[in-house]
Length: 102
Image 1 (cartoon, one colour):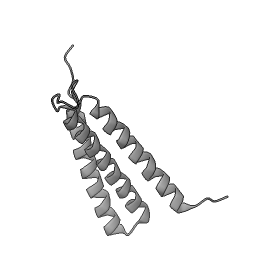
Image 2 (cartoon, rainbow, N blue to C red):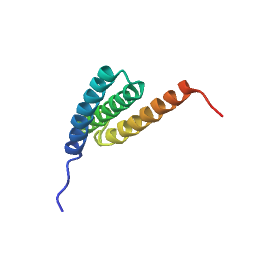
Image 3 (cartoon, one colour):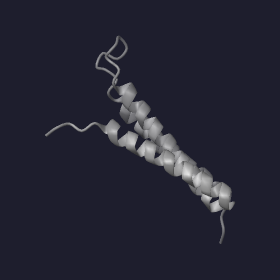
């Protein structure tokens, strides 16, 4: 079984999310829709998450050094966790600005 390169799927998602964010920002400007602006910001946040994942993959490729004799391979898990944390925080921030109803 051949090993799959995770960078390929992260790059595909990064480019797709970037294109989607641009299209949604354009639609928000043209229509003046606050909902479309919120969707554009959501897509921009997704793009940022993909950038963090790509950064983690790049950091994980670094060779072993004196401070990390077994290499930096676990960096991708750290940056993946950080990406998920950023996603959760942005969702919580958007919910807190709306307040509670009911």
